Image 1 (cartoon, rainbow, N blue to C red):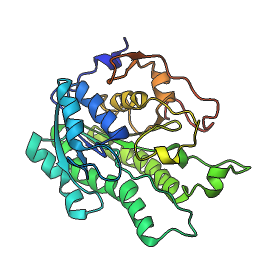
Image 2 (cartoon, rainbow, N blue to C red):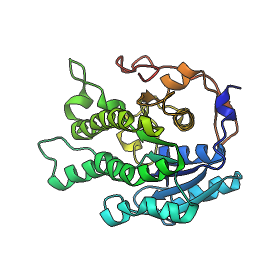
Image 3 (cartoon, helix red, strand yellow):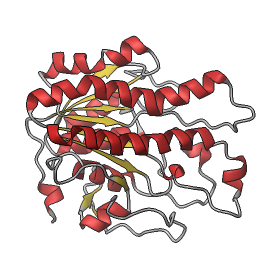
Amino acid sequence: MSSSQNVSLSGRVALVTGASRGIGRAIARRLANAGARVGVTARSLDVSGEYAGTLAETVDQIERAGGQAFALQADLENSGERDGLVERVVAEAGGLDILVNAAGFAQYATVDVMSDAFFEKTFDHYVRAPFKLAQAAIPQMRARGAGWIVNVGSVTSERPFKPYDEFAQAGGATIYASMKAALNRYTQGLAAELEASNIAVNQIGPTGAISTPGADRYIPSGYPTENVWYLAEAALALCHLPARERTGLITYSLQFPRELGLDTVDLDTGEALPPPEIPELTHPDIRPAGE
C-alpha cells in the first residue's frame, strides 16, 4: 500500500468539528485510526436531534477500533461555547496539533426569501467558526512547533455554468456557495500567513455529493454519491507533512487521492477501496493536485 496507510499521527491531538455524523465523523475516525487522539465536537452529545448521529456514537466507534477520542459538546453558533473550545481541548489533552473545520448545516434558501437569521447562521458556520477556531488554535500550534488546519469546502464554491441548470436557478445554494468560496480564499491566505510558523492550512471538499443524514434530502433520487472514506483519506494526507511541502491547497475528495495515488480503506468494512473514479459530470475547474 501507499504511504498513506502507514502515516502515523501518534502523539498528535486533533479537534474535529461536526463529528457526530457524516463527513466530520469519518475524518475523526480516520485520524484516530492513524494514531491521533481526537477531540470530537458537535451539538449532539448523546441524544440525536433532527438528524441521526451523536458524539457518544463517534467516540464509541473510535474506541472499539482501538483509537483514542473524547467528546466536547458545543454549539458553534454560541460564541461562548465556540470560543472556549480549543481551550477545553488543551485542558483535556495537553495541546492541539490538528484542527478540522467540518461542521455545517444542510439548509438552502434563495436570496429573495432568505432571512437575516438564516444568513447569519450560514456565515457563522462557514466563515466565523473557522476564523475564531483558527485564532485560538494558532498559538497552541506555534508552541508545539507545527500544526495543520483543514477546512471542509464544497464544489458549489466553483462557478455555475450557462445555461443555468435547475439547481443553480432554484436550489437556494447561492449564499452557502458564497461562504464556501470565501472559505477557499481564507484557506489560501491563512496558509501564506502561517507557512513560516510551520502550520499548514488546506481544504478538502466532496467532488460531488456524499450521502449524509443532513445532505440526503438535497440529493436528487438516482444521483450518484461517493464513498466518504476517499474524503477522509484525503483529509489525513493534509494533516502530516510540513507546511513548506503541502499548504494552501483547495482539494477535492476524488481527484486528490487519485492524483496522490492514495490507497483508501473503508473503516466500516475493512475493505480496500479501488482508485476513485471521476464522474463524467465533475466540475471542470477542479484542479486534481489542489494548486
